[in-house]
Amino acid sequence: MFSSVFNKSVAAIGRLSQSLRVQLLSLVLLTLFGAIGFNLYDSFWSADATAKLVTDRTLLASARVIAEAVRVDEGGNVQVDVPPAALEMFDTGFGDRVFYQVITVWGNLVSGFPDLPLPAAQRVGEDRVFHGADVRVLMLDHPVVGLPDDGTISVTVAVTHNSQYAMRKQLWLSDFAKQFVLVFLASLVTILGLQRGLAPALRLRDAVRARGRNRLDPLPPEMVQSELRPLVHALNDHMERVQNQMAAQRRFVSNAAHQLRTPLALISTQASVAAREDDAARRDEALAALRTSTRQISRLAGQLLTLSRAEPGSRRPRGDVTDLSKAAREILEAHAEEALKRNIDVGLEADGPVTVEGDGTMLREMLVNLIDNAIRYSAADGRVTVSVGQSDGSAVITVEDNGPGIPVAEREQVFERFYRIMGTESEGSGLGLAIVREVVEGAGGSVSLGDAEGGGLIVTVRLPLA
Image (cartoon, rainbow, N blue to C red; front, top):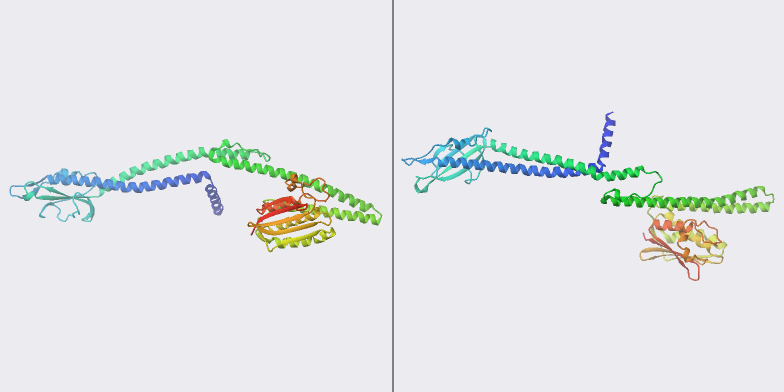
């Protein structure tokens, strides 16, 4: 049970530590307490200096009263009758003891304690120890009429620290009370300010929570303060991207269903024909067509899977180092049989290794689609040339063919999913260039289309070098 309570307490503390209100309040209070701690430290020594100053002024007044009571009698002897007021001015109710000493300039003791410690300078109070007690001592030199050569007497007065410490404590506690009231008021104002300041943010939270699953219309930025409006704009931008992505996904699913429906229906028809056919030759013909349709739908499914994996966020980022020259050579070798069947001349131009960093599997898929498209859309007895090199700090791949090419007006549209140019005789799904763009942009590169020399298409891909 104790473990459960402890875990709940830790979880509650964790939630509080993540609260903006608690963080701001803690920051403000820590700043206030730090400033007040410094002020209290400073006020303590200020109160101590004030108490010492008051004590020194009282000691000086007492010494003057005693000095004015000093007289010289007819025999030339120095005498003093210490007035009671000189000592009673220290009677503040804190039980202080007063000591004094009156000596002549020649060192003769007139009255008082002979062993009373003397300060280093007159009219300046100093702390000393006398008879086991801490005292504040002050000395005053005062001229006396009747002494030869304008002689002076020295009056030293000392008092224990009870009254001084009491005054220091009272001054410091008074300042402490003011500081405490200041902290309380500042905390109250801070809490009210946080409540008021965070109210728009809480309204924004409630507005987002109250929305249905399909509501992605923008939020009004005016509902929050100007400092939070960039957050609302960011939310609106994010919801707009989500809307666009959802629309693209809906189009993709719709187009994929449409693309799969036709070959699946064709496969079903061809299988039924083959099953009913008694003639072996015609049955073999139907089975051959069935195998062709199966390969087409298998390729379409593979391209759909590749396109899904190429989309941002669908795979964990990878940092494979891929040699594009080697990968292009291997892919061309894999497509050599197909090219030979149509008497298409394929070639590779590469000066040496060209390495890039990224998802090695997807980069190979990009090359497969580029080369497959070039061979597929090239006429018989045509040519396909793949070049791999470096330029301006980038890896450059070009795939050139002498096929029908792509009109300038449609070169941006062919990168859309399932888009096919009207009148194209070659069978295809319209996903090849869409896959190429997704992979290239995911690797931080760019792809462009152009006219090849002598007719045809040239695809240029630029990728950051490893």
